[in-house]
Image (cartoon, rainbow, N blue to C red):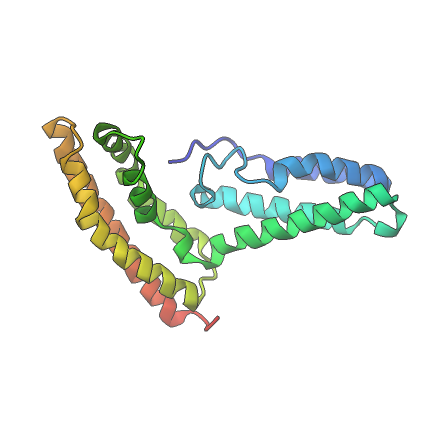
Length: 226
């Protein structure tokens, strides 16, 4: 699910901070504005389509890049800026806060990770034929186990409310996988050998969802009420 490219944000930020030290506030702000295109807008080059697909190590590196950007922006004195620069400063602060809030849910909201939701959207796409859906499922179903393993690695602070929501979604997702998704495999117009492989992958995917449900349930018991 992820076309991962090398993630060099941390080393690039180390170099950038060295440059920023020698700049006055105006040039610092201009440099940060240029870098904000890379740092504050997702999907980034390592996120092909879904933020949830970011690998754990890349997610950590991305979080570090946000912290470095925040530190560099905080070091600028807004009173030293022109009116136009002040407007840019305010816009960058707002964009940074929005990005931090959005990516924070990748740590505390297990409901963000929801493969049955993706599969339901896939089956609902009127532009896809039965065979095209089958071909996409051939790629996506085997990824369920690794996907939920990565999700658990990134969810370092799951909240009780979000765990409860994830439970509800995935219990419904299990039912969907056993009915509508099962039917989609049958009508996929693939060769019988491919359908047999899909059936095995679907079984494994349902096991991965079941394990995630168990994990969410245990986290809900352990997590603080927030």
